[in-house]
Length: 219
View (tube, rainbow, N blue to C red):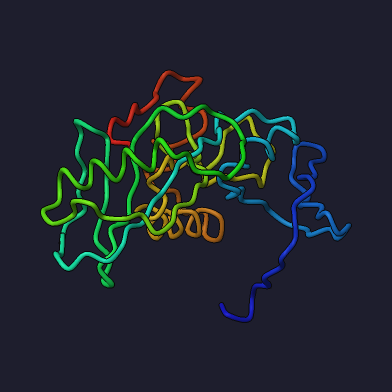
C-alpha cells in the first residue's frame, strides 16, 4: 500500500466531469490528476462541489478556542457544562483548553478571536474549576466547523451524482472522533466496492428524501 499513493501539496481548482463520469481534478498549478474523487475538503467541501454543479449543504461556521495558564489541579474528564455552553479539558502540561458553544454566523470570515468570548470562557472556567480563580488566558485561535443542516456528516455518494464522485465531510465538530472509522468505510467502498450500512444513513441524498438525522449533541 505504501507504494501506491502520492501526496501532493496543491489547491484543487475544479473537479472535471464528462459524460456523467468524474475524470479527475485540475489543480491550481495546472496539473491534472486522473481518477475517482473523494471530497474531504472540510468547510470548503460545499464550495468545491458547487463549482462542479453539485449542491451539498455544508457551510463553514467559525469557532474559537482558548488555552489558559498552567493549573496544578488536574481535571481528568472532558467537561461540558450545558447551562453555559462552555467545554474544556486539561492538558498533560496543566493548561485548560476549550471554548464556548455560542451562536456564530455561517460563512467564511477572518480567523480572529473576540475579547467577549475570551472573558466569558475565563469566567466559566473559574466558576467550575476549584483553584482557577484569577487564571490567565495564554492564547486563543479560531477555525471552522463544517456544518450540515442536521449536524451530522455526509459520506458516500448520491445516485444522481457523476460516477466516481464521493464525499466524506460535514462532520459538524465530530471529525476527530469519527475519522478513523469513516476512513475505513470509505476505503472499503471506493477500493473494494464494500458498502457499509452507514453509507445509506449518512448519504447526501438523505436531505432530499426526508431522512435527516438531527444530531443534538454539538459543541
